[in-house]
Image (cartoon, rainbow, N blue to C red):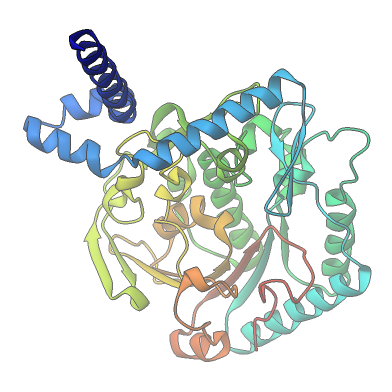
Length: 401
């Protein structure tokens, strides 16, 4: 009887030890990933524990570990095609996570371009110079498996051709990238569909240059010179939305590095989000950069990409208190512009960033662009999109509705 009691006690103690180990693993993992930040933070031990607890979800940790195991299995078995929530995610020939572009009909593209033309005409009538910026997505850069149909190049050529026919002032960044021999590694993340910050910085320079050539935009070219910026590198730090869906081991290239690009020169910016009733003033790093998304490494919890601009908002207004001109720019954008607009704000007095997509997470009602343009009287109106999707998708091209 005593032996049975001892055996039961040993079993219970063993189970408790195993349970303690299982519970502690997520917290230890986060600590070792971020020990440098935590040790250098000058926090008390109790505060460090609170920080770790705040940034770790026990259930989420093991749910994501399950994804990692499955993604490792996919790689071990050479699986390159996964359907997640009705979306197809592929492994490109180069090892990048991609989704193929569906074919867009000529009729839909013509409708979209006619709406852009109407928006250009309206902007011009209001005294604003107009520029449509075409931002190519990853689908135009990657090599797909032979059995996969990808219409990115087809859609692009048809779209650009229609823009030209309608005499829409256009900056074709796909063409600019080709001229400068910029490739997949220069532009795209491995695990995400957005541009790298370096590509956003480059695109901002091209926008400023194009506005000067076409519209006489007076900007300080030193603000578009990467030599005047600090670049902080975060190695193996970012897992994009595609990577979060299929797991970090799906690509043999691993997870993404991330770069924080900040000016070496003095900056003074006021950033306002009217619908959130938030206003802050400070330098570049403390206004148009959201440091909280870079503070710690947690591949599944944080959207590191959104450290630029703070992510997506219905309306974001940045005032450059050190501006060398009085120009007001309104830019209609998707999330591709997150890594562009922080740098653009350095070369104008005011930058009004508007997102008109029909997405609930943006909050508030869509902005009436015609009324807003009349109210703020911008000098320049820019549209920066990476999509040529049908006109009913997210209301992207319903500028004047």
